[in-house]
Amino acid sequence: MTTNVKFTKEIDFHLRQWQEMGERVQKHVAPVLKQQDELQKAMKPVLELQASLQKSLEPILADQEKWQSVVASFDIPRYTLPDLGLVAKQAEKFKKSIEEIISPAFEELQRSFKELPPKTQEALILLGNHGWYLDLEMPIPSLWKLKRALEEGSVKMVEEELVQYFEERLDEIETSVVRKFPAREKVIRAAFLAHRRCEYELSVPVFLSQTDGICKEVVNEHFFMKQNRKPRTAIYVEKIAADTYRAALLSPLAHSLPIGASERERGPIFAELNRHMVLHGESLDYGTKTNSLKAISLINYVAHVLKYDDGGP
Image (cartoon, rainbow, N blue to C red; front, side):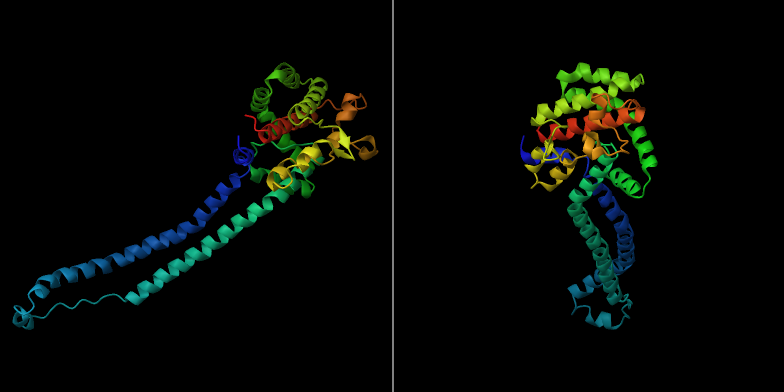
């Protein structure tokens, strides 16, 4: 599979905003197209009048000398044509209206594409700092909405929305992760079953351990191991840094986030889901629905962004 095909797959879900921008352009252009239609309707009588005049004069002009005396005895109908200068002005106005609408729309599209990688990275890191990870099926406008809400301090609202979102996507996520990693099917399905039974003390550790295993399997690096205070998966991300959007999409793998924070990084008031504290028995209150869904968001994210990048199905 070529790099271009992999890249296309990878960003397929996240460039849906282009469609929305296209719809926005269409919405702005619609009034102008209506104006064009009205202009054409206004010109129709003029064109019909010109055709009628030409048709009435054709037999006379065909035998001008023969009918010269006859023509002299008749009053040729006088046709008052509309001011074509006004029509020309309307056409020029229409052209200018199109340019004024289309040009800013495409400038916005170009600017949005340039801003996409840094904005995506900011959003994903912000989500990661609260224990959540991107689902590639999530529409990009929803990602920006969550980013703004977190920046405004609406953590509880974001948490409630993401709990509902991932709970509704549970079946699809389970199916897709198992399809990508069939050798892990028994363990992964057991973890999802535990989640559905509200046995979160069992589901969370399994999701975290399988996330680490998937990382090792795909990129030969452990998700939760560090080197120079950075996740070892950062080594993998840095290799593709030139591809700015792919690097942005993988940015949570290159940053130290709460899920993998060391004891020194956690501090005395640390309250986020943390792999070390769960698997080493330091945390006794991790068994909640929210934490289980956070762990599901993590394994779903890692399974898909790494498998796409590796050229997998």
